Length: 126
Image 1 (cartoon, rainbow, N blue to C red):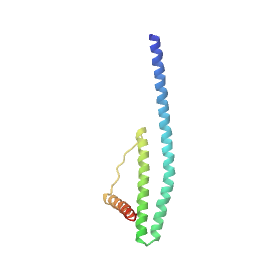
Image 2: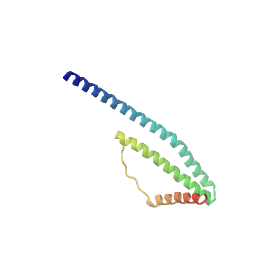
Image 3: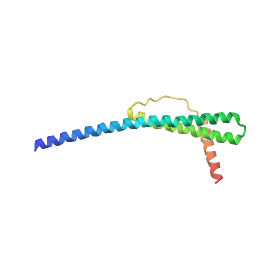
Image 4: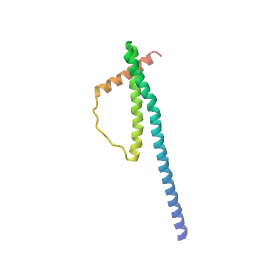
């Protein structure tokens, strides 16, 4: 009976070790996927940001400029969300380093105002 218990414990330990190994492999695959998706998402978003800023310099129509600002703020928001996803992955690995940065509350509020204004204006047209 003691021999059977020992065998069962060894099998359980082997199963746990295999499960841990598979979990670690899965985490590595997820991190690799997130890093690749980050790059794939950043490239078009940066193109959208660059083109919208370029168009803003050439156009004098204020309504179009407002719409381009919304595109800019939305793109920056998406980039920030991508950064947050990658930060979560870094937290899991214990690789996240926090840094202090200046924060412009007035600018953030202006960006939120522009986004919500555009959303309200779009809803009013439907």
